[in-house]
Image 1: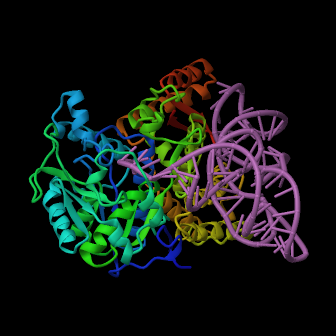
Image 2 (image 1 turned 180 degrees about the vertical axis):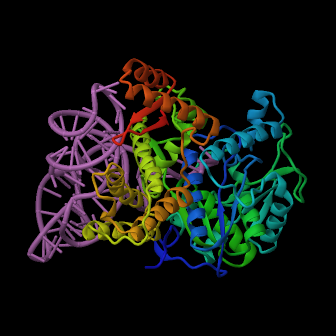
Image 3 (image 1 turned 180 degrees about the horizontal axis):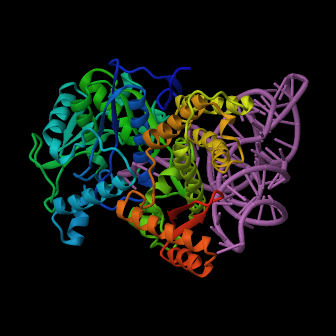
Length: 496
RNA sequence: GGUCCUUUGGCCGAGUGGCUAGGCAAAGCUCUGCAAAAGCUUCUACAGCGGUUCGAAUCCGCUAGGGACCUCCA
């Protein structure tokens, strides 16, 4: 079974092969740091983190490039050329770079909590003005861009005559050329479908750089083309991002890079679907965003409680990345419980003793488990079927719990299978899905204190001093720590 | 208006032409000093109407609803 990825460009699943054996170049459109990240942003960065982890598991050395857009894009094509970032900076009376730094820091903070691996390179747009100018000059030299009033535009009509502009996003070029938009500044362009490579800056515009065409700032799409080319080459393996970026952003990226580098830039285009709220895309313009800080604190009218980043990560994995995922507090609560149950089973599993030489007493069960385990990679190979992987893992949760409680004999499955199970659970949950324990069990001091309380409580129970035993459990519960008696007389605990 | 996608049980959410996805919730039972957890059992759905087929939630058409993109957007 080959490893297949759905390629947005061809609209079908394709077997994955990398350009350079053993290596993968992956570019993912990063955040615009003019504001705080919200739940919608969590999806691509968590999903492509899984892609990165899975490719790594497959033995590839991945160069993962994810940009920081700190130069600001236009509020609206052609109009006033207002830089989003400098506009907000004025409102908040901050230096533009101060604002950008603040939100960059917040972004890093949030995605560290999500346990996302940092990109290999995280280039900023402002740090690559030179590369962008160079690229624009090349495109002009090739005859696919023209200057107008100190701005530079890409000639879409000319490009479309020899190339397939619109293929990625399913646009019809004639429709695009005919589209009438009542926007100012359109007269600078030869065609309405043309897009800016460089915009001249109005006097009040704070972020500005010198260029061969006067002072200005780079256009919408050129930064990704320039930085991807610089760090991944003229042609690289994977380009990812939200599907709302397909047009015009990625379509334009293809056009720019193709002209500049004389070849199509990307082998596999991957797009994640949106997170919706009441069926509608979460986005600033809809006024329905839940910021990540609000999600983690529970401080939002739509939230019934605070949510752990791992709950969100799990929630995202429960849906396929190409389907819309509808958010509600209720759905997240369900994910929280589900994740807790699965994770506890995982931790129990890792503690089960293994007798390697034992044969399976229950062959049927052993076979079933072996099948479930073998399917995990098959599901992932089929365009990242994370929900199916989780479904199989859940199938095994009751079995793990039953073995632990003695409801299923320890020798029902072979030592070999048990060992494999441990290995696969760890591999998929921790290494590939990047999930981790949500409670404070890693704290040694707390562990020791809890052990002490458990000893006292055990003693009290033996003495039938239920007043003391209940007091310990009840007061711990008030502190958010759940103490559970187990069938064999043992006790376990967890943070609520 | 154009292009495209989508409609699954109380909720979330996989999915393939024929075989119970899974999770959460709910109900009953077992275990238990009490609790919690856990285990077992129950809940069999695919918007509507036609068509193709031996057989369709899965393919086609129509109707209705929802959504995305066409403007910054993950």
